Length: 252
Image 1 (cartoon, rainbow, N blue to C red):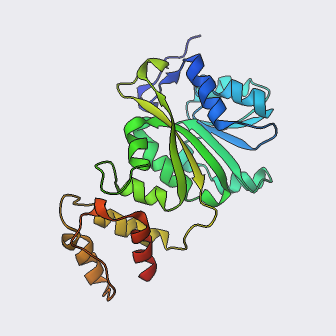
Image 2 (tube, rainbow, N blue to C red):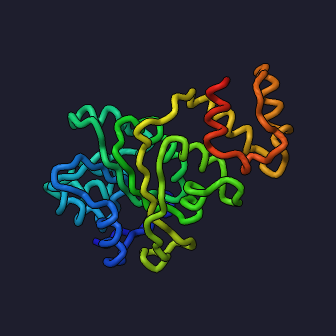
């Protein structure tokens, strides 16, 4: 029976064979690697992945799709909202120090998923995700560009990222109203030591009024913390490189 895409789950099923092959090549799965796929849907990427891996763990919220996936002999199905999945515990259960994570992420909750995985980055080898192209543009953006944002800073301090593939709307059924792309995210081997919660609060404050100079936002926040160091607040949030945000939070 044909599965009807469910709007509440943000379902758009990948159907373009050439694009699927390009994504699998970018991921480059190797036999026996512990890999987790988020939102396998109708298994467009799942089947070619499992053919190379031998076995694959998948996370699927839609119970009808999860039931279908359980019929596959080489899949372990986690029927859950991905935001409730403890990837650190999953890595321990698989007796693997690192997991590879892939998926076609629902556009409506892509940022929360990225931040959830950031909490488990210590057990992640790499991540390959299909996302809305404009989200990936923000993820990989350089300072002093219109796409540089809170998302850029909060991911770039911890990952090396690149946009590896453009995916047009017609590659899906039903076609989304936006362009898509595939991003590769590799955790930095020697990340800076920071208070992540403090970093989140600081960066959120900095970008809360991005058109204004930082003295109106971050400057006042720093004053409230009796910051006595040097930091140029006569700039806008988008003009400050990631390394400077990192250095500032370390000095606090």
